[in-house]
Image 1 (cartoon, rainbow, N blue to C red):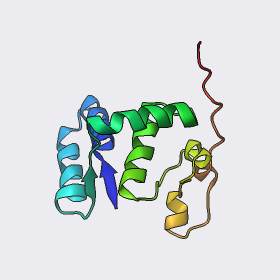
Image 2 (spheres, rainbow, N blue to C red):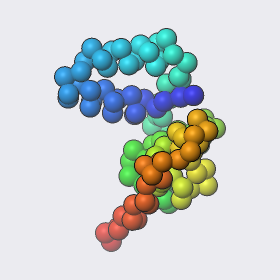
Image 3 (cartoon, helix red, strand yellow):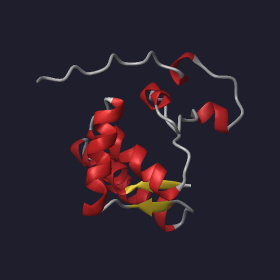
Length: 118
């Protein structure tokens, strides 16, 4: 299992915004230091693949980043975001991995494709 550096930073931004610095440090320790999650990073050479994935699938930057990271490292995306269903890789929901019956929030309606301005 792995988490992208982008996701870690997003979690950190949100937790620190909510004044949860100590909880963020605990999270990092639990998940990365003591846990078994790998921390994945994409570098400058991967930015073209992110831009292409955004164009191809109508992703925003964060979805394209997650998709490219999963593809580059041969991982399965685990997400509640149905946008990944439009890709060749698809996704698994947390309920599928835990072999639990799906709940309504596991399969949200697909967001409409973003329109592109000429």
